Length: 264
Image (cartoon, rainbow, N blue to C red; front, side, top):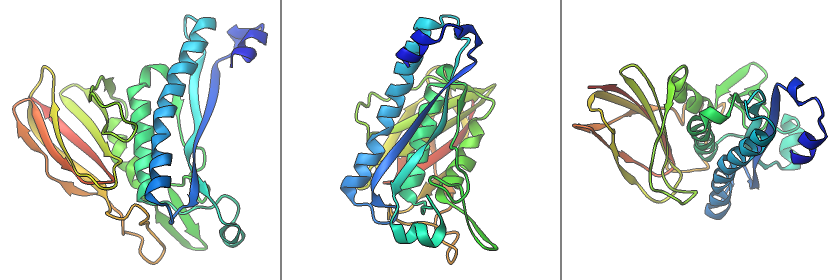
Protein backbone atom coordinates (compact mmCIF):
# COMPACT_ATOMS: atom_id res chain seq x y z
CA UNK A 1 0.00 0.00 0.00
CA UNK A 2 2.79 2.42 0.91
CA UNK A 3 4.70 1.74 -2.32
CA UNK A 4 1.53 2.09 -4.37
CA UNK A 5 0.55 5.41 -2.82
CA UNK A 6 4.06 6.84 -3.06
CA UNK A 7 4.20 6.02 -6.78
CA UNK A 8 0.68 7.18 -7.56
CA UNK A 9 1.17 10.80 -8.61
CA UNK A 10 -2.54 11.46 -9.22
CA UNK A 11 -3.90 10.34 -5.85
CA UNK A 12 -6.85 12.73 -6.14
CA UNK A 13 -8.22 10.45 -8.89
CA UNK A 14 -8.42 7.41 -6.61
CA UNK A 15 -11.92 6.85 -5.20
CA UNK A 16 -11.41 3.52 -3.47
CA UNK A 17 -8.68 1.18 -2.30
CA UNK A 18 -9.62 -2.48 -1.91
CA UNK A 19 -8.24 -5.05 0.51
CA UNK A 20 -8.92 -8.79 0.42
CA UNK A 21 -8.84 -10.87 3.58
CA UNK A 22 -9.44 -14.61 3.50
CA UNK A 23 -9.31 -16.69 6.67
CA UNK A 24 -7.68 -19.82 5.37
CA UNK A 25 -8.55 -23.18 6.86
CA UNK A 26 -6.20 -26.16 7.04
CA UNK A 27 -9.02 -28.71 7.24
CA UNK A 28 -11.84 -29.81 4.96
CA UNK A 29 -14.97 -27.77 5.68
CA UNK A 30 -16.80 -30.50 7.61
CA UNK A 31 -13.74 -32.02 9.27
CA UNK A 32 -12.30 -29.20 11.33
CA UNK A 33 -10.68 -30.05 14.63
CA UNK A 34 -10.83 -27.84 17.69
CA UNK A 35 -7.28 -26.71 16.94
CA UNK A 36 -7.87 -25.81 13.28
CA UNK A 37 -11.20 -24.17 14.14
CA UNK A 38 -9.61 -22.00 16.82
CA UNK A 39 -6.78 -21.05 14.48
CA UNK A 40 -9.16 -19.89 11.76
CA UNK A 41 -11.55 -17.96 13.98
CA UNK A 42 -8.66 -16.21 15.71
CA UNK A 43 -7.71 -14.63 12.38
CA UNK A 44 -10.61 -12.18 12.56
CA UNK A 45 -8.63 -10.19 15.13
CA UNK A 46 -6.08 -9.78 12.33
CA UNK A 47 -8.83 -8.55 10.01
CA UNK A 48 -9.72 -5.78 12.45
CA UNK A 49 -6.07 -4.84 12.91
CA UNK A 50 -5.58 -4.77 9.12
CA UNK A 51 -8.49 -2.33 8.72
CA UNK A 52 -7.01 -0.03 11.37
CA UNK A 53 -3.52 -0.25 9.85
CA UNK A 54 -4.67 0.30 6.26
CA UNK A 55 -6.94 3.23 7.09
CA UNK A 56 -4.19 4.89 9.15
CA UNK A 57 -1.75 4.42 6.28
CA UNK A 58 -4.16 5.82 3.69
CA UNK A 59 -4.84 8.81 5.97
CA UNK A 60 -1.19 9.82 5.70
CA UNK A 61 -1.66 10.38 1.97
CA UNK A 62 -5.33 11.38 2.06
CA UNK A 63 -6.12 13.43 5.14
CA UNK A 64 -9.60 14.37 3.89
CA UNK A 65 -10.47 10.70 3.32
CA UNK A 66 -11.47 11.06 -0.30
CA UNK A 67 -10.18 7.51 -0.81
CA UNK A 68 -12.59 4.94 0.59
CA UNK A 69 -11.28 1.68 2.08
CA UNK A 70 -13.08 -1.43 0.83
CA UNK A 71 -13.01 -5.04 1.97
CA UNK A 72 -14.53 -6.43 -1.20
CA UNK A 73 -13.42 -10.05 -0.73
CA UNK A 74 -13.34 -11.81 2.60
CA UNK A 75 -14.52 -14.94 4.35
CA UNK A 76 -13.39 -18.49 5.10
CA UNK A 77 -11.39 -20.41 2.52
CA UNK A 78 -11.11 -23.99 3.69
CA UNK A 79 -9.04 -26.86 2.40
CA UNK A 80 -10.88 -28.23 -0.65
CA UNK A 81 -10.23 -31.92 -1.48
CA UNK A 82 -9.63 -32.65 -5.18
CA UNK A 83 -12.58 -35.07 -5.24
CA UNK A 84 -14.97 -32.34 -4.02
CA UNK A 85 -13.69 -29.92 -6.64
CA UNK A 86 -14.06 -32.55 -9.35
CA UNK A 87 -17.61 -33.37 -8.29
CA UNK A 88 -18.93 -29.88 -7.52
CA UNK A 89 -16.71 -27.44 -9.38
CA UNK A 90 -13.75 -25.28 -8.48
CA UNK A 91 -13.77 -23.64 -5.03
CA UNK A 92 -17.07 -25.25 -3.96
CA UNK A 93 -17.12 -25.79 -0.20
CA UNK A 94 -19.69 -26.71 2.41
CA UNK A 95 -20.71 -24.05 4.96
CA UNK A 96 -20.92 -25.12 8.58
CA UNK A 97 -21.74 -23.71 12.01
CA UNK A 98 -18.08 -22.71 12.22
CA UNK A 99 -18.45 -20.80 8.94
CA UNK A 100 -21.47 -18.98 10.34
CA UNK A 101 -19.58 -17.92 13.45
CA UNK A 102 -16.74 -16.72 11.20
CA UNK A 103 -19.18 -14.65 9.12
CA UNK A 104 -20.61 -13.04 12.25
CA UNK A 105 -17.13 -12.26 13.59
CA UNK A 106 -16.32 -10.54 10.30
CA UNK A 107 -19.55 -8.55 10.14
CA UNK A 108 -19.08 -7.45 13.75
CA UNK A 109 -15.64 -6.13 12.79
CA UNK A 110 -17.21 -4.12 9.95
CA UNK A 111 -19.83 -2.67 12.29
CA UNK A 112 -17.23 -1.70 14.89
CA UNK A 113 -15.04 -0.05 12.23
CA UNK A 114 -17.88 1.43 10.17
CA UNK A 115 -16.26 4.88 10.14
CA UNK A 116 -13.20 3.49 8.34
CA UNK A 117 -14.93 1.47 5.61
CA UNK A 118 -17.13 2.29 2.64
CA UNK A 119 -17.80 -1.33 1.67
CA UNK A 120 -17.52 -4.82 3.12
CA UNK A 121 -18.87 -7.78 1.19
CA UNK A 122 -18.32 -11.46 0.50
CA UNK A 123 -17.43 -11.64 -3.18
CA UNK A 124 -18.83 -15.08 -3.96
CA UNK A 125 -22.39 -15.73 -2.83
CA UNK A 126 -23.34 -18.97 -4.60
CA UNK A 127 -21.38 -22.26 -4.66
CA UNK A 128 -17.94 -20.66 -4.25
CA UNK A 129 -15.99 -20.37 -0.97
CA UNK A 130 -18.00 -18.65 1.80
CA UNK A 131 -21.35 -19.02 0.05
CA UNK A 132 -24.76 -17.91 1.23
CA UNK A 133 -26.46 -20.35 -1.14
CA UNK A 134 -25.52 -23.81 -2.41
CA UNK A 135 -27.13 -25.31 -5.50
CA UNK A 136 -27.23 -28.69 -7.22
CA UNK A 137 -29.24 -28.83 -10.44
CA UNK A 138 -32.75 -27.74 -9.42
CA UNK A 139 -31.96 -27.80 -5.68
CA UNK A 140 -31.00 -24.72 -3.66
CA UNK A 141 -30.36 -24.41 0.07
CA UNK A 142 -29.62 -21.53 2.41
CA UNK A 143 -26.36 -22.02 4.27
CA UNK A 144 -25.74 -21.16 7.91
CA UNK A 145 -23.94 -18.02 6.72
CA UNK A 146 -27.09 -16.98 4.84
CA UNK A 147 -28.90 -16.94 8.18
CA UNK A 148 -26.15 -14.81 9.75
CA UNK A 149 -26.64 -12.22 7.03
CA UNK A 150 -30.40 -12.43 7.51
CA UNK A 151 -30.05 -11.87 11.25
CA UNK A 152 -27.54 -9.03 10.99
CA UNK A 153 -29.35 -7.07 8.28
CA UNK A 154 -31.24 -5.44 11.17
CA UNK A 155 -28.15 -3.20 11.52
CA UNK A 156 -28.61 -1.71 8.05
CA UNK A 157 -29.21 2.08 7.86
CA UNK A 158 -28.50 2.47 11.58
CA UNK A 159 -25.61 4.31 13.22
CA UNK A 160 -22.83 2.21 14.74
CA UNK A 161 -22.60 2.46 18.52
CA UNK A 162 -19.32 2.11 20.40
CA UNK A 163 -19.06 -1.11 22.40
CA UNK A 164 -16.60 -2.16 25.10
CA UNK A 165 -16.07 -5.69 26.36
CA UNK A 166 -12.72 -5.56 28.13
CA UNK A 167 -11.94 -8.71 26.15
CA UNK A 168 -8.49 -9.05 24.56
CA UNK A 169 -8.65 -12.67 23.40
CA UNK A 170 -9.39 -13.18 19.67
CA UNK A 171 -11.73 -15.97 20.78
CA UNK A 172 -13.55 -13.91 23.39
CA UNK A 173 -17.03 -12.44 23.20
CA UNK A 174 -17.55 -10.45 19.98
CA UNK A 175 -20.05 -7.56 20.06
CA UNK A 176 -21.40 -4.93 17.71
CA UNK A 177 -24.31 -2.53 18.10
CA UNK A 178 -26.20 0.07 16.09
CA UNK A 179 -28.98 2.51 16.79
CA UNK A 180 -31.72 4.41 15.00
CA UNK A 181 -33.97 6.56 17.16
CA UNK A 182 -35.22 4.46 20.03
CA UNK A 183 -34.27 1.15 18.43
CA UNK A 184 -31.00 -0.62 19.26
CA UNK A 185 -29.65 -3.72 17.51
CA UNK A 186 -27.07 -5.80 19.32
CA UNK A 187 -25.14 -8.77 17.92
CA UNK A 188 -23.23 -11.13 20.21
CA UNK A 189 -20.97 -13.95 19.03
CA UNK A 190 -19.56 -16.76 21.14
CA UNK A 191 -16.68 -18.38 19.18
CA UNK A 192 -15.78 -20.80 21.96
CA UNK A 193 -16.63 -24.45 21.31
CA UNK A 194 -16.90 -25.55 24.94
CA UNK A 195 -18.11 -22.62 27.02
CA UNK A 196 -21.47 -20.93 27.52
CA UNK A 197 -21.15 -17.21 28.10
CA UNK A 198 -23.40 -15.49 30.62
CA UNK A 199 -23.52 -12.02 29.06
CA UNK A 200 -24.41 -9.00 31.21
CA UNK A 201 -24.75 -6.03 28.86
CA UNK A 202 -24.97 -2.54 30.31
CA UNK A 203 -26.69 0.11 28.19
CA UNK A 204 -24.87 3.33 29.00
CA UNK A 205 -27.39 6.13 29.52
CA UNK A 206 -30.46 4.16 28.47
CA UNK A 207 -32.86 1.52 29.67
CA UNK A 208 -34.50 -1.38 27.87
CA UNK A 209 -38.27 -1.18 27.53
CA UNK A 210 -38.49 -4.36 25.47
CA UNK A 211 -36.13 -6.87 23.89
CA UNK A 212 -36.37 -9.88 21.58
CA UNK A 213 -33.60 -12.05 20.17
CA UNK A 214 -32.88 -14.78 17.63
CA UNK A 215 -30.08 -17.31 18.02
CA UNK A 216 -28.16 -19.37 15.48
CA UNK A 217 -26.48 -22.32 17.18
CA UNK A 218 -25.51 -25.95 16.79
CA UNK A 219 -23.52 -28.02 19.25
CA UNK A 220 -21.42 -29.53 16.42
CA UNK A 221 -19.28 -26.85 14.76
CA UNK A 222 -18.94 -29.14 11.71
CA UNK A 223 -22.72 -29.38 11.30
CA UNK A 224 -24.18 -27.93 8.10
CA UNK A 225 -27.36 -27.60 6.05
CA UNK A 226 -27.53 -30.12 3.22
CA UNK A 227 -29.83 -30.83 0.30
CA UNK A 228 -31.30 -33.72 2.33
CA UNK A 229 -31.55 -31.68 5.53
CA UNK A 230 -31.76 -27.98 4.54
CA UNK A 231 -32.98 -26.69 7.92
CA UNK A 232 -30.53 -28.32 10.29
CA UNK A 233 -29.17 -24.90 11.28
CA UNK A 234 -31.73 -22.09 11.35
CA UNK A 235 -32.33 -19.16 13.76
CA UNK A 236 -34.61 -19.67 16.72
CA UNK A 237 -36.09 -17.34 19.31
CA UNK A 238 -33.93 -16.92 22.38
CA UNK A 239 -34.66 -15.47 25.79
CA UNK A 240 -33.28 -12.07 26.80
CA UNK A 241 -33.86 -10.78 30.32
CA UNK A 242 -34.19 -7.06 31.09
CA UNK A 243 -33.07 -5.43 34.33
CA UNK A 244 -33.28 -1.67 34.02
CA UNK A 245 -30.34 -0.68 31.81
CA UNK A 246 -28.99 -4.24 31.68
CA UNK A 247 -29.61 -7.07 29.25
CA UNK A 248 -28.89 -10.60 30.46
CA UNK A 249 -28.51 -13.48 28.05
CA UNK A 250 -26.92 -16.94 28.03
CA UNK A 251 -24.89 -17.47 24.88
CA UNK A 252 -24.21 -21.16 24.12
CA UNK A 253 -20.94 -22.31 22.56
CA UNK A 254 -20.50 -21.55 18.84
CA UNK A 255 -23.47 -19.24 18.53
CA UNK A 256 -24.61 -15.96 17.03
CA UNK A 257 -27.35 -13.85 18.63
CA UNK A 258 -29.00 -10.67 17.41
CA UNK A 259 -31.24 -8.77 19.79
CA UNK A 260 -33.56 -5.89 18.94
CA UNK A 261 -34.09 -3.58 21.86
CA UNK A 262 -36.62 -0.81 22.38
CA UNK A 263 -34.91 1.82 24.50
CA UNK A 264 -36.74 3.40 27.40
